[in-house]
Amino acid sequence: MFEKALPLLESHFGYNAFRKGQEQAIRSVLTGENTICVMPTGGGKSICYQIPALILPGTTIVISPLISLMKDQVDALIQVGIPATFINSSLSFKEANERIRAAKQGKYKLLYIAPERLESYEFLEDLNGMEIPLVAVDEAHCISQWGHDFRPSYRHIQQMINNLPERPNVLALTATATPRVRADICHLLNIDENNTIITGFERENLSFSVIKGQDRVKYLQAYLKKNEKEAGIIYAATRKNVDQLYERLRKENINVARYHAGMGDVDRAREQERFLEDKASVMVATSAFGMGIDKSNIRYVLHFQMPKNMESYYQEAGRAGRDGLESECILLYSPQDVQVQRFLIDQSSDRGRITQELEKLQQMVDYCHTESCLQEFILKYFGEIETDTCNRCGNCLDSRTSIDVTKEAQMVMSCVIRMGQRFGKNITAQVLTGSKNKKVTEMGFNRLTTYGILKDQGAKEVSDFIEFLISQELIAIEQGQFPTIYVSPKGKDILLGHEPVYRREAVKVKEVSKNDP
Ligand code: ADP
Image (cartoon, rainbow, N blue to C red; front, side, top):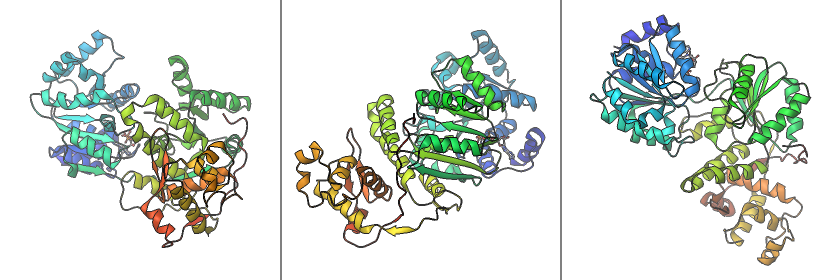
């Protein structure tokens, strides 16, 4: 059956070759295997089920949480002569029924549905009346509690499949899956983990960098000035941050649009349109913006604050450069971002997931403090084994010299041990810098031999150095309401003098602007 695939790619989509992973995925589906396909955003996942849908008899069901995107996808298919439709909450009862009737008559090759539909018993009955050879589960990480966007309605997929008179094939697709999430998807959708198709997460045209210790507003102003002709997205952590930045940039006559979930539907649609149609060059937004946005010429994605985890970061940053041209992904880091994200996690996560969310947050913080290749850090995070340095990220291009900080690291770790390994990073920094803070004296930490041994430095600097030691896995964190730090086995090796620790010469932390939203 596979021999039909390439001619269909050419005749319907106008492409003359499959991309990495597409051919494998299509072959796997056509041989009747349940399959999981992990490809970065823009990698071309849709083709992996659209081509099989054309080859297989009956109607392929596509489950997607992106209601706003469904119509565009279906319109695009109809335009190239592929009969397709969607059913979601945007339709009237009558429209939905008409489409279901037509689907039962086999009028469509693809039927897109929102996962919530699967909660309706009537709808499951309707599906029983259709010939369904393949169920494509888009954004499959939504099925996993370990993913960053868990949707309970995805849990009905397996039940739907079990209900069908003939067992269809399953193709799960996702761009953001850690090994744990992948295993979960396979388990929940009955996919043999050997049928995993994972293509390079590396985006060769993106260069990553983390900017620390700079006045963010000034940095942004200078950056926008330098890139005023280019399209870019600025992500901020909260709606308030977005509004403030938006007003600020507007006053500076920058052609800016904004987007967050607190705005009305009409406003949001208008702002999105302005950006997509190049009427506004800069979009300032919360993470609510971007799902399913197909704008290929985004030259930079700048995070004004650190996001909550690496999945969100790579997904958002990955919206840059979908046209394959060189683009930048910049993260402006400040230690206070960690507090904001901790607060947001505390507000929004259910109790059982908080520890896990905090661990993910810590990996995000580690990304901000690593001195190794940033692209490689990301690839490793997503489970790629054979990785190499990118030679284009901020760290690969950093020409500062590395200095031996073994002694300093030993001082910090020895202090952590003397404090009983059950206190947080900030109080440890205070003890090391000889603070007269009440808690420090009350606990008797001023009598430790390590009290004040780094007093020539500021508590902030030392705190930053501890973050660096955490990113090097020499110090570890025990998550909880009050995270505490302890020395890891690797750190103990350093304490025993078995290995040296190097760090790039520190950049002096400048005062953060008062206008920093
Ligand atoms: P994803 O769902 O993985 O984010 P899409 O399926 O939306 O990606 O594809 C991204 C872009 O790549 C689309 O514009 C699509 O038409 C294009 N594309 C997909 N497959 C190919 C191919 N084999 N050759 C050229 N372009 C392709």
